[in-house]
Image (tube, rainbow, N blue to C red; front, side):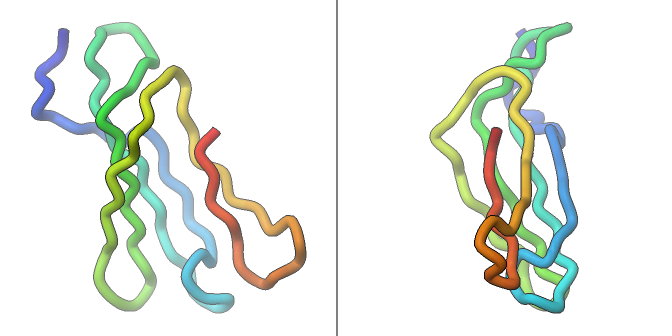
Length: 84
């Protein structure tokens, strides 16, 4: 087991999440409790807008190979952020 106090960056993505003309960064952090495994737990999503303060959201998920995905599926001028 790894040290459960140390969160690591699992994935990150830059996109216009907050505003149509901003370049915001989304960072997924969590704990990788097992060596040589992609299983992660205690996930937290950090949204760092281009202007303003970051927002932290604790996620009630755990799993293998978790990634961030951004997409505009309805041409709404901003992106939806998904965990896949």
